[in-house]
Image 1 (tube, helix red, strand yellow):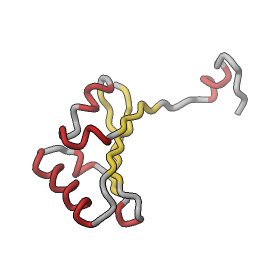
Image 2 (cartoon, one colour; image 1 turned 90 degrees about the vertical axis):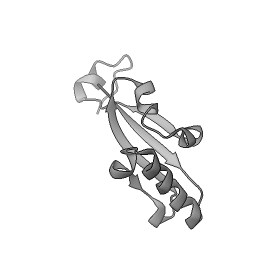
Image 3 (cartoon, one colour; image 1 turned 30 degrees about the horizontal axis):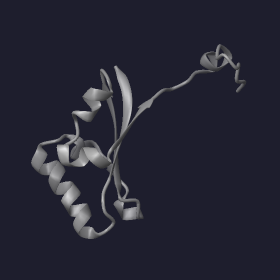
Length: 92
């Protein structure tokens, strides 16, 4: 399994925030229950970290109407050993 960060932005007004929540609720997406939202701090985005087989599967979590503005980033955790064995030998 691979780990991905899903980021879904929406408009800055209250109506846009409510619409984003409504879309997730009506789609049955588990995103709403597992997402962290930045609206109360002025960052009108929702984020969720998921583990899926691939990026395409991560995209499948999102409702269709949210996909055009969403961003999905594969996350990698590096260890000290990874850095010591890296081609440019980064030292921690």
